[in-house]
Length: 117
Length: 108
Figure 1 (spheres, rainbow over the protein chains, first blue to last red):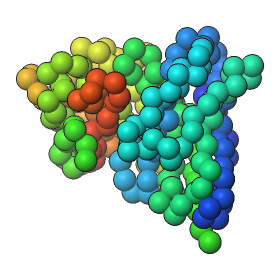
Figure 2: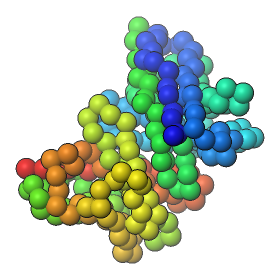
Figure 3: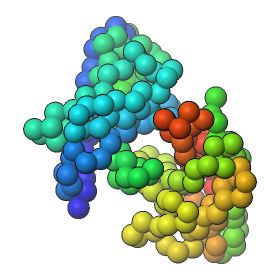
Figure 4: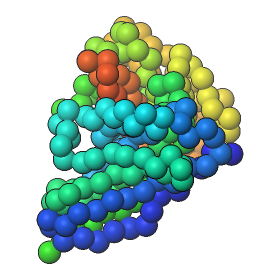
């Protein structure tokens, strides 16, 4: 069975860095893109981008280019989403999900990121 | 702004049929995918491709497309179908994906 398990809730200050994780199991990690989806409080879903674990090719939503970094560690089947300079506008729930064809067939449980001084 | 537009909210009486629509020019070239999200939970996939349901999704969920409009139909809505529903598809560049604005379904 396919599982994506995300790291726990984070509370950070503006300007701090952060790396959240998405640990996968139950399938060939390098065969499918991993997408990251943002959901700001009370708002809808937003595609942030995706990464292909076999070669770390990334496709970022154009408006987010340079704001976040996606990466993977193939040895532990884990994808990461990283910020170097958190802002209050980064407050959101972040989901990872596996892309099969054109569909996100399995989702992580989400990681809540809070940013407050 | 989203390239896929959905009605913000719809309601349906228990056991009746409701159709949720998703409009966008890219739907003329790509199928929409549909997700259900209940409060406090991660989204789940309910329809993919032309009209395919993952294992475990009831057959009261179905999808169709006409022109630039994709539709998700719930035939015989149940109380547990009360949720937010999102479509997604490729964006105008074809290289990325975009979600619709989301529709909240209330079962009366």
